[in-house]
Image 1: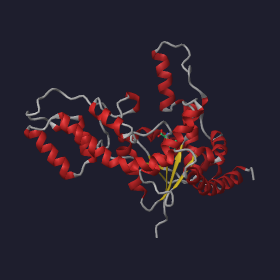
Image 2: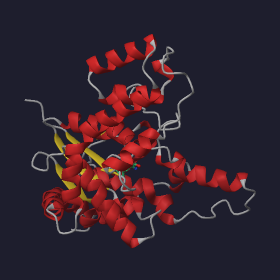
Image 3: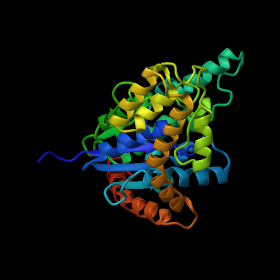
Image 4: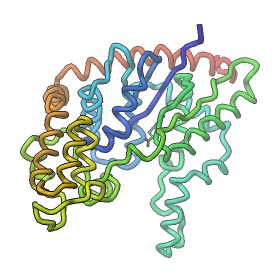
Length: 336
Ligand code: TRP
């Protein structure tokens, strides 16, 4: 029997995910989890770099955890925990800093982008606004992965460099201490194609930073209003319309079943279906998809819900692994 592989992924805790995150990340991750040994964690210390409001941080962590659980993450079959519950992550981070070249960090995309922005703004100090948390971000991420001895890390393409760095850092450690202990070298697993990129309500890629997103668990009346706001042209109801350039149609096709999508396409192309009707249909389909999950989300996100127990149980399981790894790492470097 092939040895089972450990899958691990970190989830940023930056507010309620939107329906583009659902199609692009949450749904495929839950499907891929299958029977693998899978760990999901909330990267709350990574978020601390940018979120300096304790109430917001607290709420975001709950909201993101409740979203994944409401969308179907089964805490019996997968391990879900908060990064901040695992002290070994931070101990390992310190060890890893001692085998990581500063030059490697200088070349990290996020850090370089911050310097480029300063340069473009004519700022003499290229490091202005850069904190050490941002600079060290890739090492903390390597520790997240290596402390659980993960083999496969499912992430978006934008994270490819971070996974390469984790592999490089693991190799540096293994090179020095491999006689005693070696980390498995982690590999990224990336979504294929562009199919999973959803348009936002303005037609650009759906993204919080464009403020064109549809949050997953918007209350029904707000969801309806937001869908109504999607801009459409003034083609009269009776005229034929092109589904492939229509944002409401593209969104509908991601959530409606095949028959309904095909039927809608036909009616738009033939003429006789107005944008208003299309948007009503879109609202209906979104509400049918997320309505039941929204109820579960509301229960979990409420203070004092079972969410706390779920995250604590996950952390307890994750810590068995992280403690075992740290014991080996400490012995290997001579700290036993
Ligand atoms: N940097 C990842 C992101 O922005 C989140 C993350 C933190 C992560 N630690 C991780 C992902 C470890 C995978 C493995 O999405």
